[in-house]
Amino acid sequence: MRSIAPSLSPSARESLREGFTWGVATAAYQIEGAAHEDGRGPSIWDTFAHTPGKTRNGESGDVACDHYHRWQDDVALIASLGVDAYRFSIAWPRVQPLGQGAWNPAGLGFYDRLVDALLARGIQPHATLYHWDLPQALQDHGGWASRDTAQRFADYAEFMARRLGDRLRTLATHNEPWCTAVLGHQIGKFAPGLCDPALATQVSHHLLLSHGLAVRAMRAAGVTCPLGIVLNQSSVDTAEDTEADRALARTEYARFVRWYMDPLFHGRYPDDPGIEHRPVVQDGDLAIIQAPLDFLGINYYTRIWASAAQPPRPQPKALGVTDMGWEIHPRGLQDLLERVHREYRLPPVYITENGMAHADRLQDGAVDDGPRIDYVRSHLEAVAAARAAGVDVRGYFYWSLMDNYEWDSGYDKRFGLVYVDYATQRRVPKASAHWYRHTIEGLRGRGTGGHG
Ligand code: IFM
Image (cartoon, rainbow, N blue to C red):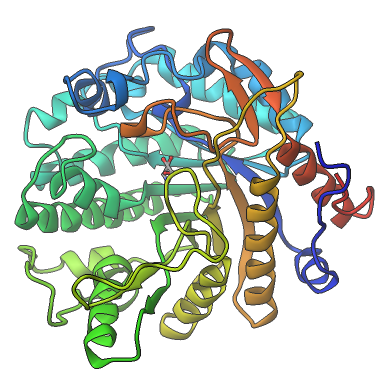
């Protein structure tokens, strides 16, 4: 293991010292397991993962990290990292097995206890209502292709916010609606595995509508915790300084970032050339979607590379790629934050996900994941620079607390600060976990400031 890991620059330390929340993130289906226990209903990911050929080696979240049973140890693990906050998601089918009608006391009790245990340790709970595990019963009625699902989601959101809202630090409606719409309904690589671009566009509208209806219902119910949404976003760079590449970059940005940001903050969908489908929008929908937000969560992993040439110009790899094959490009996070800050009147922003898959190996009881330390450090430098430039970024959540079920990639991709030995469910903090803790301690003036 490296004896000295690089620390944050003095300017980054200065920028991140005050008013900044340090966290780690997970999602229900990726860690909980206990897929058939205590009254949990099936979700679209149970169905998808058990459909032959959909996920690596047919792997599913049936067991995952067994967090449903090990949550007390996991809360202690989170506390041992010295973080301020934990971002997790609520499994809708665990608390309302059919997505409408009866509530499941065992599922509700699980999240009650989790939130209380976090608070008892001084860790802020940041919850997300939807991280892709739609109750299968709702899919059987059309899923997100059906406008009715938006109202079902609002009802679920209001119930959960009444139940947990006074104890949560923030509550987000959706995680990465682009993934649900495009990966789930256009490319078919995620549940429910459909391949229909026009439908995907309609789904994106129903997701945003469900967000707006949920925010309205939660505010009407008097929920006081900050409400927001989490979007996956990227900066976009042109391969060459040509009009064709610039046009492609505009289209990619409109599809990926503006398609969600424009309705949320400007009350309209982009109508740029290159956007092929438009959703059916009813009168009043956009006003509902544009409900003011208390925060915006941004998930950033890599940039988009716009090359209209045939064949396309290869994407640079100066800083390498992650185990997902994604280019490591921390500068893009700063570019993105400064761009959305210029283009929209943003509420406070959290980096709700950022992290790296790496082919980690457990050797002599330790995991030396130096590349992950470099990844986190360089992205924190980007966040610090954006803050110094005036972007109101209030926190950073590393994705993920621990290795977990990476969707169609199964258990092959390890994103965690903590290594999980799936055969025994043993958790081993990696070198990056120690670096993260030392960095946080150092900024609070208690530790060495990032020397691992
Ligand atoms: O694991 C996912 C997470 O569920 C959503 N954001 C991206 C992560 C890495 O692919």
